[in-house]
Image 1 (cartoon, rainbow, N blue to C red):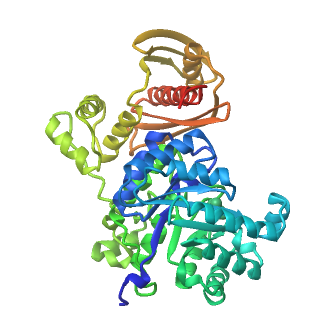
Image 2 (image 1 turned 180 degrees about the vertical axis):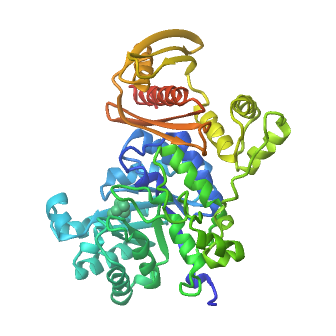
Image 3 (image 1 turned 90 degrees about the vertical axis):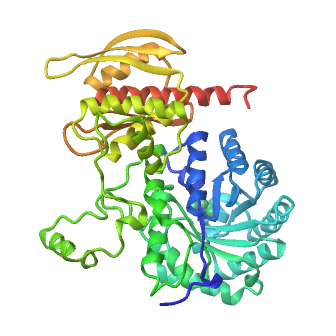
Length: 515
Ligand code: KIV
Ligand code: ZN
């Protein structure tokens, strides 16, 4: 087996909070971003790209707050080549222990002509001025040649050389449109290593999109050719078909160390926790057969496979579920379990909750144990997530009655508590969910548009909790609300109201004078 040394250490640059959040409908609140950033740091991620500070006040605040709390990982903010972008990124990153500015400009003919409407000479000037300005804020500057894989090689070499000369310490080679294939991408990285005279003064980075399903394969080809940083996201979240999936890269390098002698140093046992967190926060479910983190990734259904597995795990398992932090779905305590055992279970599942939050979650666990025959780890996770992400909501559903069935009209009667005051409402609708949402809208008004309503069963069985995600949009603001309950209508009402609470917070933040 090959030795892992500093020479073959690969840095993990996570962009879940930036490129991942650019995925339509995947917007996250500040609190959610901070939670993800903490987990990324715990996993040992080297660089956390926390946002694009010029894009909005919310993005500036996210980068700024992540910069305040992250101590070991590098915190990175994205900036286009203009001075305003770079100044804003510099300001957002001011509190960071290890700040990085990531500045980019397109270098491909199609982007320069149609998107930027700039001549190559002007782009070259912008590369030099942007990197030079970024270096005034930090010594750690990354430069990206957007659409590098469709860029003329001579021009790419010239811009990379100029960026390094101006002070860039990382050179990122994005496959922005997910167009390249592994041998071509590997050859591109090798070409840069051979032809750019000062390339040894910078780390080469991969940034591959997944439009052809090749993002991970391309990234690994880049590493084999000499790149030493991979840009990726949890669950492969990202625009269009997404970015390279971090969990796939990490586990490929770990499982095939014999063929790929590179190491990321990441704590892979936190992968499943990170995957669940990102899925919960965004409301984007993980595809059942997704490599590494899909529900079926370690399930062996066929008789022949099960027989083999019973004889020896290695017959059909190339990595263990434990290596990514997955344990056998275990039955937890029932209704007689006490606070102490519940606290221990919460800690074992990786949560750090304050006394009040534990007390609230414990009360809900008791209610759940009364309703449900068997309570699993997933049930506890769903109700704790529900509780944690709901903390501080000013509106709460305190009562709900629904009439459903074949004899319409379906009707919902509910009580909504707003800032401690009870408001009652009754409404009909095209089905019970519509009736519930109409009853809420009667009280709250507003012009929020429902973009997505999604239900999944947290565990198996007809008494399973329903996990509901509701995606609302209003005046360009986008939020995802969540709710969980054994009653799908209650979970739906909670999710809708959670989304309205988030919209309210966003409205307040963007009000004139707010900061
Ligand atoms: O895909 C891309 O080109 C990007 C750049 C901003 C690095 O995300
Ligand atoms: Zn990208």
